[in-house]
Amino acid sequence: MITINSMRTFKIYKLLIFTFSFFLIYSCQSDYTKLVKDELASGNRYDSIFHGLEFGQTRKEFYDICWELNKEGIATHGQNNDYVQTILEPKDSLEATKRMVMLFYARFNAYNKITAMDMKFSYSAWAPWNKDLQSDKLLPAVKDTLLKWYPGNEFITTKNNAIVKVDGNRQIQVKIESDRDVSVLIENLEYKYNSLVK
Image 1: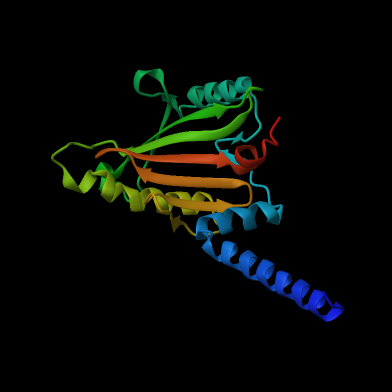
Image 2: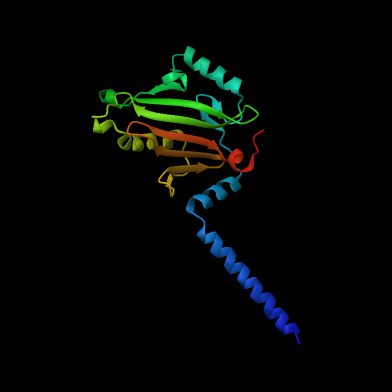
């Protein structure tokens, strides 16, 4: 016969198992998953990308801004006309070989609104034999540049060896793409995970 005390004990036992399971699952989440959840839950919004470009702008606005950047001599077309190109000059004029080429192009959703920005960085004087200008040497410089442009949280390393920075709805992922290039993807996590951008 089931008594009230045994029912209470059973309920307490179930509650303890549920609580233990919850903390076990939560502790198994990666630092990255926890960071994304915390930042999205914060409600902080960071829609600005660079050069007046922002998440949510239309394809036409993207082209109009790039056209203005071209007229101002800030940007031009990149390799094979696949990207917009701009040059980042080093602070020290004696390090001319450290000029960085930045290529970028927006990703759009089904409503033709910007949800992410693809970027590639390389040294303008890169050559296969010049070990000082390879992507593994470029990566720290790209990381420092991005931290200046986008202050806030630090970068963390994920399981796939990319480095990632998350602030509110904006995620910046950096990884070595080739001996020459470091790729960067700036994404609106609200669109990626919640499909809120319309």
